[in-house]
Image 1: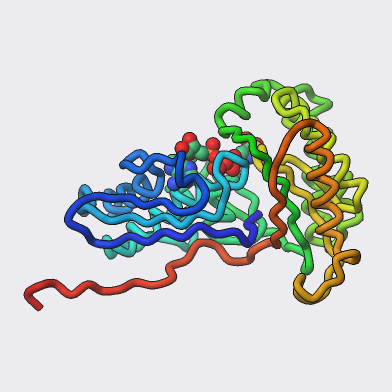
Image 2: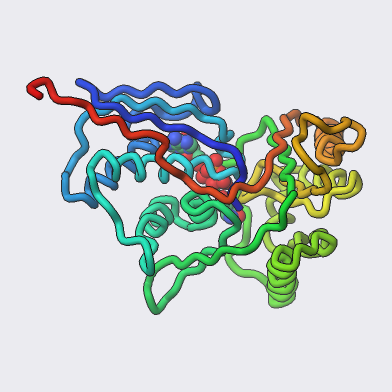
Length: 304
Ligand SMILES: Nc1ncnc2c1ncn2[C@@H]1O[C@H](COP(=O)(O)OP(=O)(O)OP(=O)(O)O)[C@@H](O)[C@H]1O
Ligand SMILES: N[C@@H](CCO)C(=O)O
């Protein structure tokens, strides 16, 4: 599900390659061609038949915390792909093909984050063996939902978190999760948030991942006790996401005591602190919109 939390990428013509990173990951993310925005731009140029891209000046303005289960790597890949397609003047087949989504998911290895990143909203990403490609399906999101995210000072890379989950699962665990996946989709389609606590229970990945993350269940339980409809590990972690609703109007006009998102956020922070873990709370909402081009400026050549 896409949330209203954005990274911005500016790509400009330049004499030589450079990269400036502001905000999240400014100190840690690579500033060379291994940065995923460059991977995206290079892929777009390759697809356009233009070969290697010319040197560019990259500016990344990052709001999405990285290696926290919030899809920052997909955001970087998709931003690079879209910027590269615009710069190379190349268009992809969309309708009935989902080319952009498939290219992004192939770079990332799965569509879990690329689908909401490309399209916005709540997306199911399924590999279609007949078409030999990823296919996505949009699910309704009830209006007024809030996403309260506990983002700990603890980075967990997806490949590490995936290493904690067994390759095989028992039949009973599969049945447990399949039933809850169906209930989750029903809850969203029917605007029935009352079923979300049950629908967001899990028997497949949270327990093994909690072995490296002792605060996981205390924080989930604190969010539920404070009134969240459901709470769960976001992606492969380390962010823990709680879903609340009930506010009317802009958050700035609310009385603090009446704001469930604040109560839930405070409860999550406290439970984490009790486990010796610090972090930040982000309160956001689902975004219906995916990645988009803000502006394209034509650069006049010297001889024009
Ligand atoms: N521009 C970029 N933004 C974010 N991560 C990047 C970028 N370029 C390279 N990376 C690398 O990608 C890795 C982070 O990807 P990872 O998939 O683990 O985290 P995430 O996308 O934030 O979380 P998740 O996939 O669990 O939602 C790090 O090793 C990071 O160095
Ligand atoms: N949904 C994936 C991670 C996507 O970031 C997982 O649980 O491994």
